Length: 472
Image (cartoon, rainbow, N blue to C red; front, side):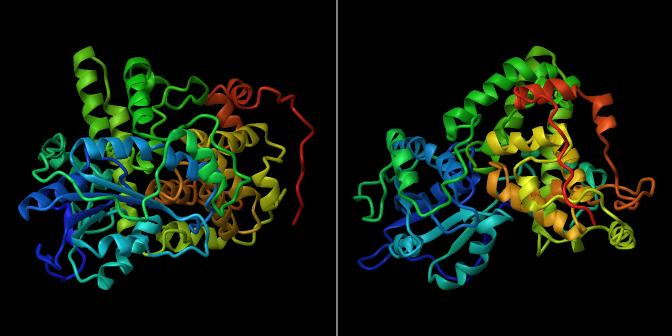
């Protein structure tokens, strides 16, 4: 657990007594699983050390930004599995669904009232980041945050890294010692208390009605491709090992080949850990004499570069985070003419002249993800078609927050800002982009099977008349 656990307040452990702590509380904010979870393992150790049972708590509120049917349904699908696995290990389990904005927003504090200590997830974006900043000082018990999201702990790095080439050697120096399975102790005290009164029972059959009862955006439909939960994540990992790992190095940048793992939503919602994915891939590759270096580079080096960026950045949605050369060149070209310019509504509804871009946006609208390579192109075109660089950034983040199952994540902010020059280098100067890398449709056609992808995502596409947008 070295470099993974930090106590975020100075409170002392509430010892068991008549008015003392009744259990250790694990609050699953980002890593909603018991398997391969260093935070849950630390909570078990803490409970055993103080001869207490353990309560696993997770909640879902209606008030987070862009709360909608897609995000709610994906998260709720995992609840029955998590409950069953936690109880099988001897932990208690409580889930709370806050349905209306007028409902009390104090479920965590009510559950923590009888706890001896709180253990939660160290996650550097979205609401977890805000809660871990504001909640600890309000408690009279210890509040521990544990990094269960990275293979090499985020705290191992003392500063923000400039690019993959600076973080890569530091990761590889300690990678072997970090690539070890999580040891989960046996809980010595099984949960025997009744569930707290605020518990919301969830079965798979109930999920549509539960979602319908929530005061959220019901206009964003459930993903056509991804279904939440631990079992689904394990199934996708198994499929990737059997079918796609052997193709990954050759075809991972060919979206129509569908050779990637499809695990980004499950990593974001904590259904599965990067550590168990890396171990499974490494072991399968060794057994079947396959090369896995390129996949592990993306899973470990590139992903953990994003977490490093998020950890050391106060405001993740700002162009001020760009390297100086990128800020300078974008400022120089801030007033360049854009032609055409599309409104946010035109972008959201995939109404541009570019059939490939429309297909990528449609993939986001229907599946809840965009293939990583085309997401680069998707972002670059939004820069080209937006009135300002700042409006382009806001549009990309808004669309991801609303539709992406792997949005609101360190990877999201890093990949979006990469479109503006983050973790990249200067290129040939051109209008609007300056020296920031440019990507063209002709380049996509040379490197990928554009028409095959369009037909997969938009089978009824018949090369419609281009929508020109408004002109500046």
